[in-house]
Image 1 (cartoon, one colour):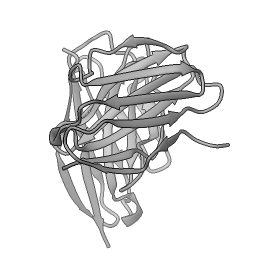
Image 2: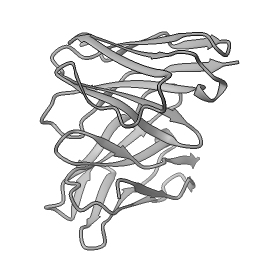
Image 3: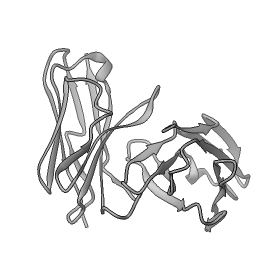
Image 4: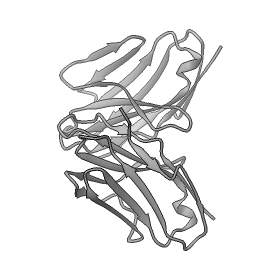
Length: 111
Length: 114
């Protein structure tokens, strides 16, 4: 029940395309859903986050879509760029700060 | 402002040796987390502290692993004795308690046990 399932494991997108990464959870007590971005040799960094009281959040080219009834949320990267090539992790937590991460998606954007 | 500082960045050791990883959290943060990252298992939470007190160590693999936080600016993760299956990147992260999910990660310590 503590797991966050993420797919796909890897994703190849052409420059300018849309990248979509999906996550699903079981624990309805989760109330915070961030996405982290990790470049090789670096630690993950917070990219964008959402709480379950809204269905969508957009920051620049990055959008989180949240479906509370389905217990699913996804990251959309519009106009994907080679600089977006990284590993993306979804995560979920309750108010005690314990973040549970998905298994990660390696995104490669080709020019 | 300095971020989370981890040392060493790389450690190569032989099976059976003791390994100590160190972390300095961001000043003012009162929650500290140790994660382990491998290709097979992704990011696993090992232990986290709040106000220097261990809150949840259910992710610590076994008794060979121990973590301490003697003060608000320093934490260690120790493996004794180390085994090849401990090879991974170990991340320390800190946060302001109450700002759920906003973790700031260090650059990690890559451990190789031969």
